[in-house]
Length: 380
Image 1: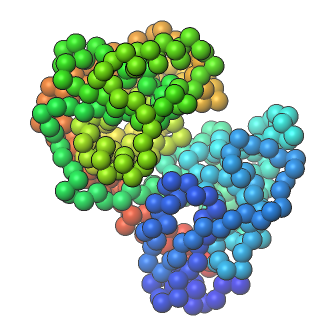
Image 2: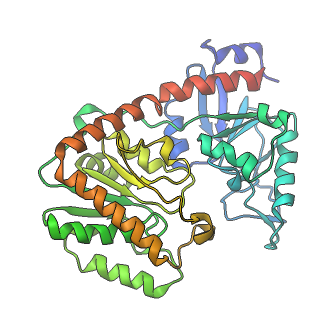
């Protein structure tokens, strides 16, 4: 039972409310460093008990958690089994239902019904989506529109830490371009092709791919080899994973343009990281990305609504890139990239606006205000 003192703590009293995170996700680690006033964060390990029937590609799916040392458990990515009060934070509702029984697929209705059962329990307090687009999937994918369910739902944007001004530069003489992540799913093929086109006009530009051969994920060996050869044969392209510390301290401060023309995306936290450094971003208008990037103000968005990306790239795996889709993304990426390369003033304008959005809409102050209210309600 939570004491009255603990309940008052969310409002700023001396005794902190103790919130446990279930997943050491990169974003969760970031959040743990900047708790709301009156809240203490820590990470909680699952109990050894395992569900032998349920299987999922998500690590720790439906793990068992119980703790007498915490007032509330905040589950990240995966739902949990617990007797504690708990809330659940996800990018979209599809993530919540990613499981099967002994490797055998289950109909969506059965998976949704089980999640509905978990969230109807009295100890489940809040379902938090990272975007309005994510919240819409509760109805569009889960079909859960009941009033009691809607009362348990909230949208709270992830927070990104404010980057010191001395690490921010808005333009430079030599343009450095950055891409990171799963090469094919995030649009790396289009990045390489657009870069090669732009390179013929602007021979001084440079591209860094923060990924390695393991990130060229596809079952199409010919496609994989084609782009590995393109990358290896171009001396202006640097490819390889780097430690997060190097990315934050060295690479992002030296980046002028960030490219992420992603085909599918649950949220896109890497975009926020670039914006925090005042870097203009070129991406697609898929899912929640337009809630971060304003086209023509903080970056450019390639419109992919004419293509059913969810159908083309099921399971987040890219084995074939349709020619018309590839041509559309590459050509738009090339056009927007050239505009930014040619105009340091435009890069500066976009970068300043992007940084302002990161420091307001996606600030820890904004997130913590929202979470204080959620914790207060959960403990009330």
